[in-house]
Length: 256
Image (cartoon, rainbow, N blue to C red; front, side, top):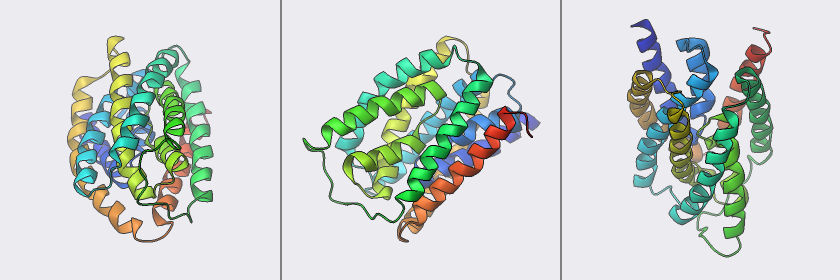
């Protein structure tokens, strides 16, 4: 019962993060499952988080779609390209040592966090559309992000948001909403691969999803308020990445 309650609370935090920044779902879900809920196997935690994050991302996508924050054509091109990469990346990730996977994950997170802080002053172009200039960038970055997402067993929002901004120049609020299309697609692809190997705890995933629905509603509202302040949403996004990355790195190295 205690594990179930922790799973429900953890799901709420994950849902809030997805609603707020379009990412951070698996950044939070994997360490929460391993260190708080008590899932012994990092690979089981990755598989379980993938399905929970994918479903919660779909729910949060509906919230952002109603607010017209989603650039659908750009998002769909990115997501379709990334699914191929996610399938390949998740196949490779299953054969890598779990603790090494968490350490590599944390280092990658810190690099992305630094990039987000560097570009936090940019406003972006709200009228951006899919065109022949950004199409190749969306395909290439989608493939690369999908591969990393599958390899590390993450929904990938913390990679997708910067990648969408880099490819199209869209504002971060649009990138957050649009990223959830790919987060859903990548998560389902990775989860299917892990489920095929029996690496998903379905009852725990259900609790995560339940908690994530409420958290996602609150997160989407917070994102809209922060987006009105220049650079605030980027700063929150990067800060979340740094805090969790440092903790994960310390745990994987046995320092805490």
